[in-house]
Image (spheres, rainbow, N blue to C red):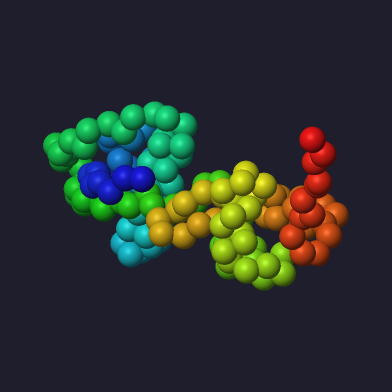
Length: 151
């Protein structure tokens, strides 16, 4: 998870809108009919682009200060801890409600590897697929019985 800043060059699109591109991140850009829409779009694009790079194990380039004559430079702050690119998920509390167990039991199931989960920021997200798979497995109520061993 990264907290960083990158510069974008914002330009008029010739039709009343604006577009912004991040020179340090080819393919990362935003667009909007107004300046505020462009800023929101560019900010979302930056966080998503950086999160995807991190997920793919690609190191992030160093931010540079672009020298432009045909646009305005705006700096954008990105915190990829708030971006979730993973499989459809739910919070651990929602998983507990879905499974009819306590949140502590969900934590134990995650630790045991029976539920797939990841941390995004300060939140534990459990994949919907693993919750569905666990819910469809037959289980008997109560603690498992210990088998007697004879020596």
